[in-house]
Amino acid sequence: MKKVPAIPKGYHTVTAHLVVSDANRAIDFYEQAFNASVLDRIDRPDGTVMHAELKIGDSIIMLADECPPHPGHEDNCVCSPETLKGSTVNFFLYVENVDEFVTHAAAAGAKVTMPVTDMFWGDRYGQLKDPFGHFWGVATRIENVSMNELKERAKQFVSSK
Image 1 (spheres, one colour):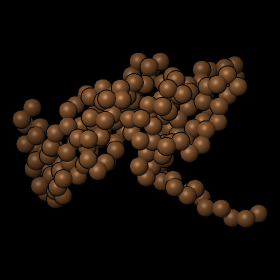
Image 2 (cartoon, rainbow, N blue to C red):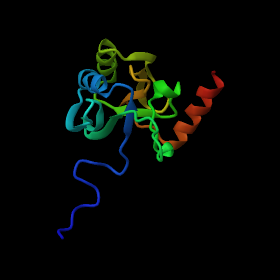
Image 3 (spheres, rainbow, N blue to C red):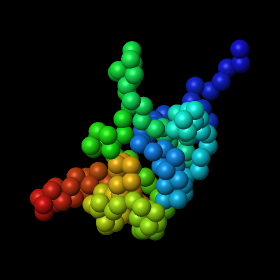
Image 4 (tube, rainbow, N blue to C red):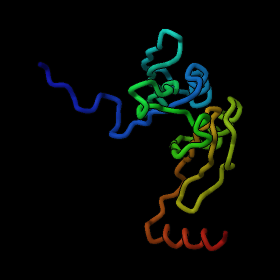
């Protein structure tokens, strides 16, 4: 048997796998809002998405429609943030121009939950919530900050709140 790479080409060690309530609509949204491209897609007979792979920038994410529990597999249920009424995960994207990216994503239907601003850690940063309940931090690095300076700025930031 031919040896294959342990990590497939184009993947990184960690790959996000999003679960949504309408993967067909989500794919359209990510293509429009985040300039994603579909690399692979497998649909169930009912037209829902069993598995899709999208590329955003240089990263691949996996995506699927939620799958309710079924007998014998109750612990394998995967639900969307909408079904769970919240999410415990936030995604972080570095982009070339955060202001343009957030404006474009908002025009495509993302909700800006934190306007883009210069942050103490050296990024220009904002936050979005996509129409499927996932949160995205988006940033462009504008300054390299030493760890000592970062700690001092963090103290000042916290004390100003």
